[in-house]
Structure formats: structure tokens, C-alpha cells
Length: 61
Image (cartoon, rainbow, N blue to C red; front, side):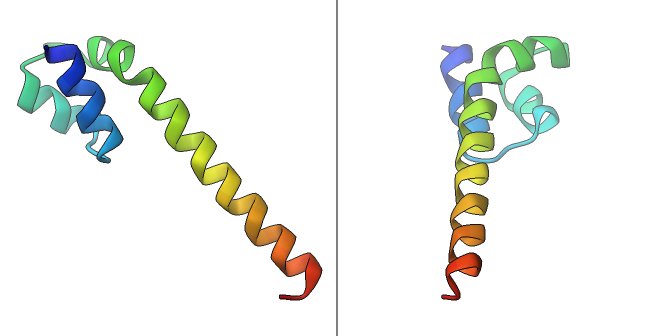
């Protein structure tokens, strides 16, 4: 249950320290283990947004 909560909090944009405060995890390495997928998803979404901006600039939109 804490793993799911940590993942959801990461998806909502909480920092590892905020997640630990809420879930009670003792180390940041625990948080990183549980939030890695959410972090990867967020990074991919941000990269795709940047690619779209570059595409629009190149097309003159």
C-alpha cells in the first residue's frame, strides 16, 4: 500500500522528501525504488512536450 501511495504521490509531483514524510519511508533510496517508473513517465512526457515545441518553431507556428 505504501508503494502505491509513493507512486501516486510521485505522479502528482511530490518531492522524494515529501513522499517520505507522508509514507513514513526512512531512506530516499526506498522512495526512489518505488517512484522510478513515475519519474520515467514524467521525464518522457516532458521530453515529448519539448519535441512538440521544437517542431512548431521549425514549422513557424
